[in-house]
Length: 198
Picture 1 (cartoon, one colour):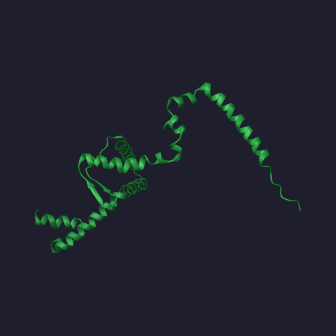
Picture 2 (cartoon, helix red, strand yellow):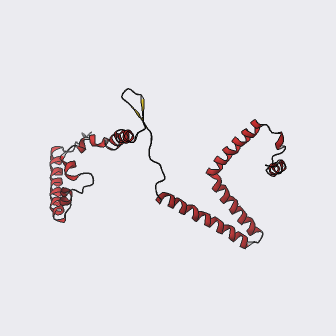
Picture 3 (cartoon, one colour):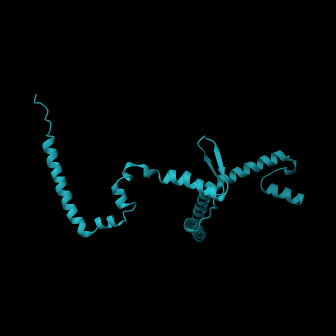
């Protein structure tokens, strides 16, 4: 790069005497710029929208309604673009790569690294699926006959039969009679305890 062009470019960015900077100072300034750029990625869109609103307000104060309207249209287009970008990102194809390395703790507490396809798949199944998604299988409620008859989503023949119209009404009436009888038995078995009169 031409030295004169470098000096002029630095002056346009308020960097005075760029040729007198040492390599350490340049590296330090580059790191600071990278930190500011990372921070701007988080709040930059808010600052830009605030700046555009301010420009539109200033245009109105100067009586330039057409310029203010154009600025508001820019804001609206950016909002719509951001909205559809999020929609497309969410509904689009998966962008993640396949897992190539898995680290697992063995019985002794040591970290074992799996790198082959077969060992990675086995480690994922044993350490994630079985522990995280099948831990509920050990609950007592999952060990009875009710779970076996109805299954996970109640789509078994027994579930369809129990929710049929011909089955709901008699079951509901028997349930109501059973509940009423339970209330009657409970009321006679546990009478109200009255506090002794003073």
